Image (cartoon, rainbow, N blue to C red; front, side, top):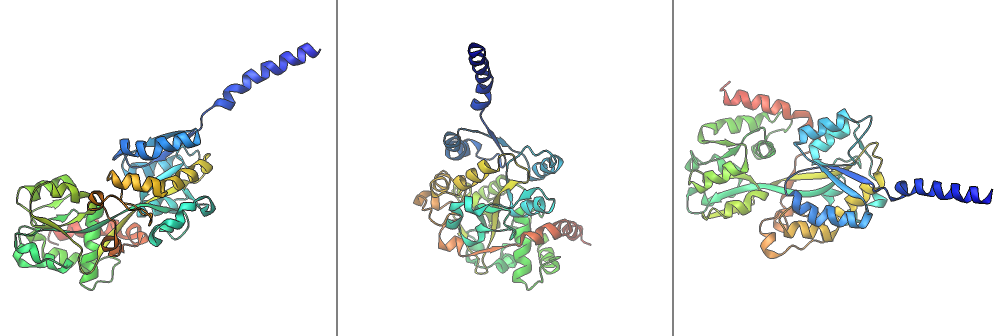
Length: 343
């Protein structure tokens, strides 16, 4: 009998080994840009710490949100990375769960705007970038110091604006409405003011590469630009400068959340906390992957020049309320198409 029991226990232990050795998988729905550098500085070091596997599910924000919604009864994704207004949409659909801030020790090191950007404790900021102005310094655009200066007749025909379907387009509309005394919401004032200069604009750009090429070809003197594009603009060799307008720059925040129903919520919190650490945020900043939201990060001087970092940049940021974008952006695009059509 003793021999039988010993043999049975040995057999059971053999069946138990695969379960004990099974590696947990953490799925991140995030941006595919700079995936290799994210793996180097974030995912691979975290895998070594947690003895788990991190899988990235990339794609457009709209596609990733749709997948999250389609699978909400049986979630596959654990961590959701998105712009703040996309995260708020996900929250409104019941796809995110409240964060346990006791497990996010590094949240205390974040700028205030990044600690609870949705104001419901379902997201933290992971990175931020500014939308400011880039101008030629050897042209009549050299004196631009305000968003209102984009209406100067001296730059007619040499002004670029972003297409309204882009986040930069939303930012320029927000600031146009703000500086000309609008009431936000439908942005009627901003729409009307942009309509006044639509004929001054040869191109409403949809991609930063397109905008950069137009500067390189001497076809642009001024444009609202996301800070992440500044390094490539400098490489054109043209005499350009980054302008922080006196009314401020628009801050665009990408957030991190734990998906509701995640089977790996503990690991999801650990990854987010690691992501927010001074160590990881510094590495990502120095390789120009993301601008840091951790206040303790001090990137190399050559990297800092390309980032949204430092008092001049961070202190100038004005944020569009994410709930405003969620509620109004479809209407903004419809109204803008009418402006372009002349109606």
